[in-house]
Amino acid sequence: MATAQSQYGAKPETQAEEPIPAGARIGHVHLKVSNIEKALGFYRDVLGFEVVITDNQSVAFLSAGGYHHHIGLNTWESANGKPPPPGSTGLYHTAILYPTRKDLARALQRLMEHNWPLDGASDHGVSEAVYLHDQDHNGIELYWDRPRDAWPKASDGSTTMYTRRLDFDSLMAELKDGEEVAGD
Image (cartoon, rainbow, N blue to C red; front, side, top):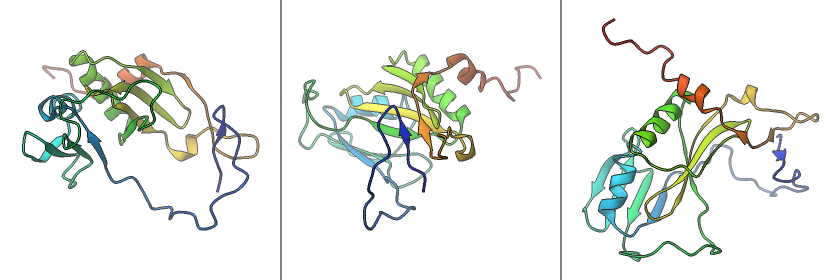
């Protein structure tokens, strides 16, 4: 199995004796937020997740496409709380994988329509991503993966990654490809 090698560090010398199964995946993220209503305003209204269950006070579970939940939000220990101070440990960001480049472009368009600020945007070779924070300063990456056969390779054949400027014009052009023009 090829291992990532890049500006982020060299290939590891050793691997786990019994690696996690290749089919394992992150099923959901559960975030502590300060206010459910404000959190829903972002995750539901800006990003477009569907509300599966909520009491509109202390908990909400959200989904893409009817799954039981991809994102859990709660105020059980954090109602009216403040974000952790810089220099603290904790979750760096949650990454939301979009199925296609066009879907990522639609997500970026939604952010722009809501005037939601971005922290950054990058082309990593294997993926393209935009970075932002929610109302509680939880980091979020919205991204799509290029097909594996398009991933950059090192001279030894292993996957490599980099960080380059995201081509916003090319990404947003995805929305124009194949769309019907009004009046057609």
